[in-house]
Length: 215
Image (cartoon, rainbow, N blue to C red; front, side):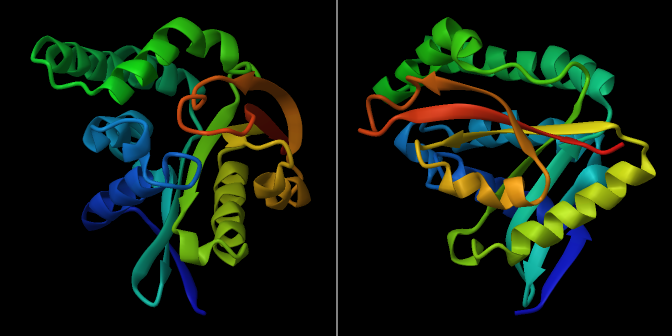
């Protein structure tokens, strides 16, 4: 299997967004918890693709997009343009959808969790640390694609003199899905049990923050 890592160019943005929608719910399609995949993909990809495209990477396997890693290596820029600009615009879109009766019961449950419980059930991250999101298509989750993407990110972070990088993920009790990150030098920084998926899953789910010191 030949894996090629490339920057996410304009023609790769849509495949990246599709993978975000297809894997956004514990590796499965986000439609199980939120019906508007476009808003979901905007929330998790738009800032990175629009404002830090140089830190967005796609893994190609025989020309097919097998996964992606999108990062913010500039925390202050992310706070200003990601949280206070991009995400506020998305909030207004959701308010309009709600006023038009376009939100489903699952959508409303998800948004209730986000606004009423999300801040309590989401663990903290190191102050002003760089961070990233990574999603891999199911059939390519054998580790090699993830490792290539992570190696590319670490080289980019070193070029930018990044001192600390973090990511958050949702894990079950056994934490099998994060062992590749632990082998890569990430350590568990904080975790909290979440009720986000209680209505659709019968397993305990935790939101975990992992951190790697680069210097």
